[in-house]
Amino acid sequence: MTVEHDIRDLNLATGGRYRIEWAERDMPVLRQIRERFEKEKPLDGVRLSACLHVTTETANLARTLQAGGADVVLVASNPLSTQDDVAASLVSHFEIPVFAIKGEDKDTYYDHITRALDHKPHMTMDDGADLVSELHKNRTELLDDVLGGTEETTTGVIRLRAMAADGALKFPVIAVNDSMTKHLFDNRYGTGQSTIDGIIRATNVLLAGRTLVVGGYGWCSRGIASRARGMGANVIVTEINPLKALEAVMDGFRVMPMMQAAPLGDVFVTSTGDKNVIDTHHFALMKDGAIVANSGHFNVEINIEGLRQMADDEPRRIRPFVEQFHLPDGRRINLLAEGRLVNLSAAEGHPASVMDMSFANQALGAEFMLNNGDSLEPKVYTIPEDIDQQIARLKLESMNIEIDTLTKEQEQYLNQWRVGTT
Image (cartoon, rainbow, N blue to C red; front, side, top):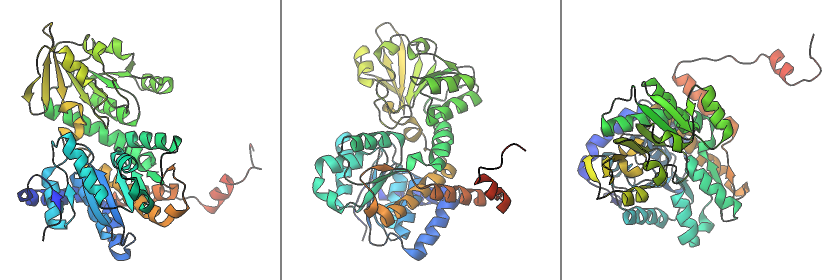
């Protein structure tokens, strides 16, 4: 009997399984963790509700959690990021309940989150904190049974820290995003490559010679700026943080306010975690044909409603992920992927090799939370450094790369204070 689900089409399952297996080849760290989990069953009996992007990489994480004994339910963390064939395979081949359909509307999205909460989780696994937020706002009767959770992305960590500061957070959460093996690689290399991939798939434009404006210079934006420059784009960075702005300057990028960049840019990409990074007064200055995309978690970074009100008619969908807004003065503004995550909406998201480390953090974070949740306060925690180091070590081993180790003499020298200049 097929497990409960709400997906597009079970007939897509075979193709989804092939793609899940293809991704697994580039996820050796997670595979090693799954092999250990199969033997030790560290999550045995744990009901785990996961609200994540339903991709091939996430499928391999779900399989790992299941191998560890967890009773997993998976829902989408974004209406446009689901890969329908992957959802079908998880249901059909791995008997994991999935509630996710690419392009689902807002009501369906939150109905699916409700289905994840109906699972009465002992543990949550979130990407953007929508699951945890709904749990705290509308399903408070379930809170007593929740041991803890993990959070995947910057936006979710920001929300969770705000909850903790307000005294609203009722259980501990591991900020997977803050692990070095997550944000140094996933955010920089993964987001950088996949965002450029999404823009090119959606538009088929040549970036070389064009001016690309990146909103923000956090880890994700660093990756986008770097990869865009590698494609030959002339990159401008906008920032509010003087240290990050200075870093962008030292990295060789032009830095200026968005108002100055607006008339110069051909392509705009936001990745800040804040709202209205590109607003109506910016649209008023943009070139005819400007392309606007977002790679932050929520579709609030671009003032889409403001753009809609500025346009003289409903937008035309001129390509599958391109809406063209016509302004009264004849200019056209092209919005990609409804302002949602362009890398997951118009492309396939991060390469499996970087998600290997991110999802290793998720799996080991869940194990850590099960073993330590009772002793943790309802706050946001970073994953322990020894787990971070273990993941890095496993990744290097999978790449056949060896590193040095300290000699006893070197260890002693680093732990003393008496010897100085000689």
